[in-house]
Length: 319
Image (cartoon, rainbow, N blue to C red; front, side):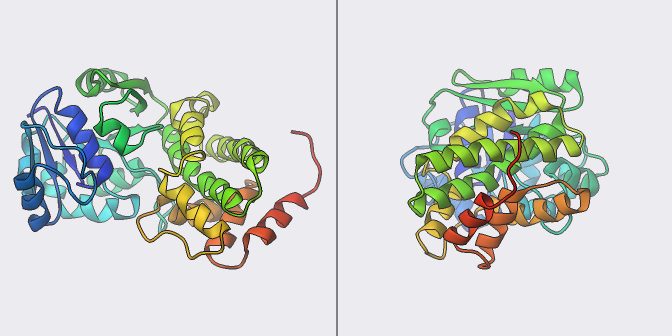
């Protein structure tokens, strides 16, 4: 088996479909009944109903199958990552893991690789991130992602293993920058969605994207990242995609908040990440006004008018 994917959500399923063009793939789901349904129907009806599974992709709930893979891609939601790794530590310990979740753990303020290092002591995991929608990957549409690992040789091996005809990977050793870019763009996407939902216009969205990118850089640099990483796929690229398309759950949450609604009911990584980033930024004395406004929107202290007024009333400064 070339690789396995943990997590049968839309993104995990899409990655498994794409990687099946290279060889046999196992798609692991935590619920046995769901795994059987996906495998027998040959489609993940709940997540990607229009994309049949290739013949060499098998769905299972048997975690022991993961031990047969050369690499295991972990595509579970960020706030479930720790529990998933702990539950399957015996199988995952010592394996080559590629973390595909984006966000920061709310309880600890840790990034995905830092969580894995705590649980698996240390894992030395790679991170796969960047501008991508599950539907595009599943359809075989051209997509470019960042593969981050501190070990250049491991990165080159994984890049060769996971690149497909339509899925192109670029390497970096800046794991911190790649993870923070992937996490913070979701927070800015909520802000942009709110602006559009509230009828504030495209100019407001452009301003939020630009100043949000500045926030991403400030936070990332304070955590030891490299500025050029944030200018790449895992930073600017993912920001551009997520802030401009209703395919993004984070953007849709913002749209609902801007329109005065309660927000989306499905998993929205940016909501927990916003609170985690706010706490970390305050501890480091890093100024994050858009993040602060998003947290206010999410906890109900601010509506879109109050959030806009708060940002527009800040002291004038050089760009």
